[in-house]
Length: 108
Length: 164
Image (cartoon, rainbow over all chains, first blue to last red; front, side):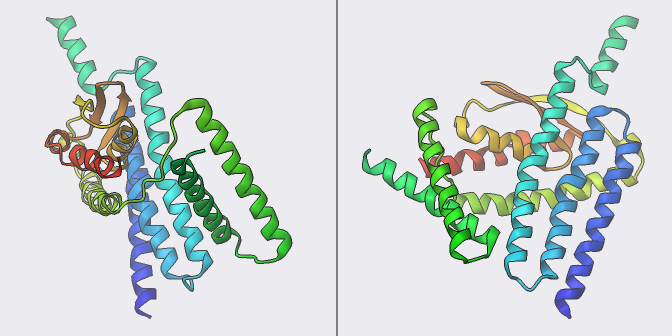
C-alpha cells in the first residue's frame, strides 16, 4: 500500500518532468537551449518513471531488468545529446551569445 | 599470460555470467550452454581486442564510484528542478553561456565520465572535448560557476585515483 502510493507519486512526477521537457523543447529560443530541455526528460524523468515501475514489481528479475534499462539509458542518452550538440557545433551553428557578439561587431 | 591478466579475464567472465543469468532467468541445460558459449566468445574477443589496442578497461566498481553516482543523482534532481522552473517561468531569465573548462588534470579514462556527468545534469551540456578543455554550454551562468568551483571535476579525478 505504501509502496503503491510512493510509486504513484514517482510516476506522476516523472510524467510532470517529461511534460516539462516537451514544453521547454518548444519554448526555448535556440538549438542548444532546446537540448537542455530535452535532457530534463532524458535524466530525471527516466529515473523517476523507472523507479516508480520498479516499486510496482515483485522485486524479482523484472526489477533487475528495469534497473539495467535505467543504467543503459543513463549511459547512452547524454552521449546522444553530446553527439547532437557536437555535430551542430562543428557544422557551424552559433549559440545565442555568439550571434549577439557578431551583430554587435557588424553594427560597431 | 601473467597473474594480472588471468584475474582480469576471470573478473570479466564472472560479470558477464551474472549479467547473462540475470537477463535470462532460465536454468535449462540447453540455454545455460548457450550462455556459457556467449560468455566464452565475449571473453576471447575482449582478450584479442586488448592485445590489439593495448587499452584494457578495468571494471571500475569501487566504493568512491558508487559514492560519486549517489552525489550525481542528487545533483540531477537539484538542477532538474532549476531547469523546470526556467521552463515554466519567463524565458527572459535564460542567460545561455559557453565556456571552456580545463580537463588536463583529469586522467584520460575519467574524462568521458566527467563530460557525460556534465551532460547528464540538466542545464549544462558538454559540446566538445579535446586534450585540454571541455567546451560547456549552460542555460544559466550560475551553473557554469558551480562547475568552475570544480567539485565535480575533483570527485571524478578522485575515483580513478583510488582505482589505479
